[in-house]
Length: 214
Ligand code: B1M
Image (cartoon, rainbow, N blue to C red; front, side, top):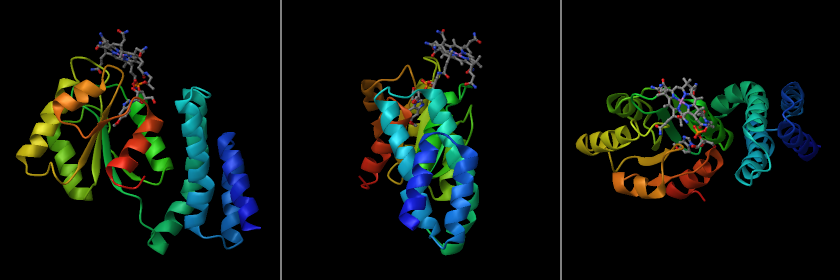
């Protein structure tokens, strides 16, 4: 019975049917299925399928956004139960677009994918300077930061942020992920990031790897 509901949640999420997902999640809760199972075997399983299809160019940004909306509709019901049950996220990651940069569509996708994969995401928005990243990492005891940049003029601010983490003695505490259209793996290596992801779904694989969860 519970396996069937969880499968239906996964399928409906893949189709982006937010109201259906919400109804099914409520039905699963009422049937006594654990919040952790609903999250991992229902919602996260669906987002993983969308992430894989996105990586293979079988679905595009609109489908990802619609699936993420369906995910969020289920998460609204599950989140308080996870808290009550003391279920821990896979890790905590602070994400933002770097200082001087206002592009947030890619960063938002990365946040959704990470959340969909079971991470707690602290979204620091756009135009985020090194001090704000550092304060957020300290406040939330984060395991990682994710920086996005879309401008050749702002991607250099990623290095400024990494240098600030080194100076603050916090570089060893956090994994640093970078991404955005003008970036390359070479650039990530040059600035001393831990990893570069070309798209939002790969950001999940990368973080899983960096945190030893893959
Ligand atoms: Co701007 N813009 N823009 N823009 N804009 C670009 C980036 C540009 C390439 C357009 C062009 O000239 N052809 C160009 C940059 C040129 C350059 O630097 N080489 C440009 C420019 C110049 C500017 C302004 C300077 C224009 C002006 O005012 N003169 C200005 C800058 C403002 C600022 O930031 N300070 C500006 C403004 C804007 C808008 C506000 C109008 C708007 C942004 C709206 C918003 O984001 N809320 C905008 C847009 C929409 C674009 C384009 C059209 C689309 C960007 C986008 O959202 N792509 C863009 C041209 C283009 O790409 N065709 C352009 C979709 C998004 C999903 O992709 O963000 O790459 P992307 O994310 C991908 C991956 O890169 C990766 O995952 C995502 C997909 O899975 N990824 C990560 C991203 N972050 C990641 C982080 C990770 C891992 C993966 O780990 C943490």
